[in-house]
Length: 70
Image 1 (spheres, one colour):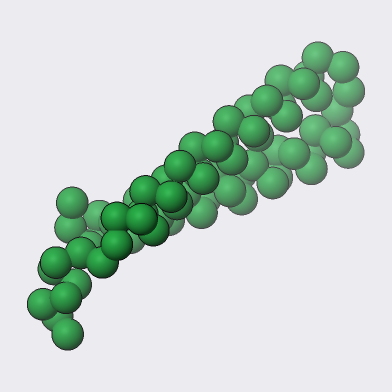
Image 2 (tube, one colour; image 1 turned 45 degrees about the vertical axis):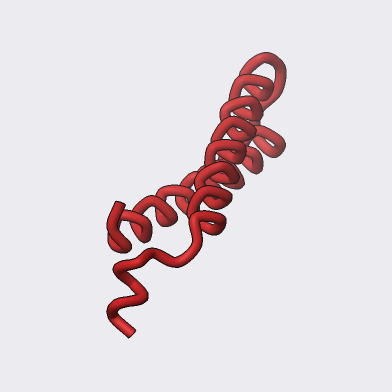
């Protein structure tokens, strides 16, 4: 995976975090019953996937391609 691919992968993680927050706020403020549970579950899944993506990007460390640019 190139450095540019790594950047886009991390942007997907950030986007999923924003989606998670938006759906959690929507569920808590506007929904009730089973719909609230479904939307909060989707929000939690988005948050877990985003956390996994961020974990992978951060702990892979610097890429060899980025080191040659310095």
